[in-house]
Image 1 (tube, rainbow, N blue to C red):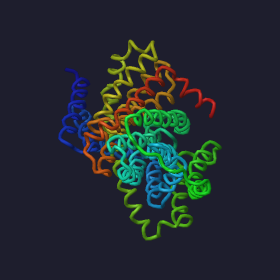
Image 2: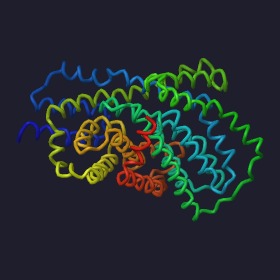
Image 3: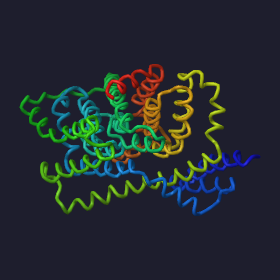
Image 4: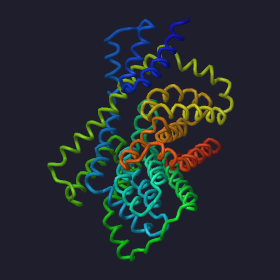
Amino acid sequence: MSPEGLAFIVFSAGMLVLMGIGMNMALALVLTGAGMAWVLGFWDTQLLAQNLVAGIDSFPLLAVPFFILAGELMNSGGISRRIIDMAQAWVGHIRGGLGYVAIGAAVLMASMSGSALADTAALATILLPMMRQQGYPMATSAGLIASGGIIAPIIPPSMPFVIYGVTTNTSISALFISGIVPGLLMGVGLIFAWRWVLRRIELPSGTPLPMRARLKATAKAFWAMLMPVIIIGGMKSGVFTPTEAAVVAAFYALVVALFVHREMRIPEIGGVLVRAAKTTAIVMFLCAGAQVASYMITLADLPSVLTSWLGPLVESPRLLMAVMMIVLVLIGTALDLTPTILIFGPVMLPIAVKAGIDPVYFGLMFILNGAIGLITPPVGTVLNVVAGVGRLPMHSVIKGVNPFLLVYVLLLALFVAFPQIVIAPVHWLR
């Protein structure tokens, strides 16, 4: 067997075994990369160390810790709660209104933090107790909140888009723009799915709040809603880059939390910074470990192997996209979003570009598919968050998410069949 074939076996079998025994994903990537270096004859501890450093030595990646910090400040400073309060004031009285509140709040919060886990945790912490108290079916409610949480990686600003753009050398600004229409369509799809689910659920309607109360709740959320306007407007007008936008978002959230809402005291900032640092360390370690594996994958020329397998489909871009999406759906059931981006993004994008597929469109589809993987078992990171916050058994949350997961799969198929839904807005907005 050739060294390249042996390297492929080491990588695929090594990842399966190490994941199966529950090893940390970043460490598994480092070990499989080291194993590939050994069989390829490139074993050198200095080379491994250089790749570990190179994996995080990127200016655009600075956006990641600042967006994480912005999300933590939003949750601690009352910004997230005010968004939910505003949505409840307008639609909370409708039959099943808390579900619509969850969808509306998920879309609004997605335009601020870019983190599926942060948004999901905030929504679940506030809304699940209210849903339980009002007699909502908890499995379906948890499934809806989990499905709303994964809109965050699609609507800008999005941390996965930053990581994908850095990893594949794709324009992060263009990726941000590409997520606006699909993200909004995800929210619309959830509304239809929730209405369909409500047909079998008996829930009372509430009393509409007076217009004064609605306007008051909206006024309280004014500073929160101004945040995405500043971020997207600043990037669109060229005032700052996506990396600088992350710094602006974190600074803005800090100022609002301390001096406008006054729900955070200066001594509490230390705890927020520690939580953000821990999450950042996890993401950056993944980036470092993936760089080791990615470098060895390139040396083994594994992209060419995958290209030879998918080569006959290059002449049919839509069929190629469909096959790639199916492959990514299967990958998403076993891998979290970040390692999926780091491992498979650089491998699959050249094949897509060779087939004439727009790289920004492919990036959006890649991230959308990976986001869906966050609510598919057995990994389902977002499902675990909702189950933990709501103290619900995992199997019931999996059952509850199915109607909304079906809507997302249908949207994925729609974007494969009609790529202009994604591409046209990008060209128009740019």
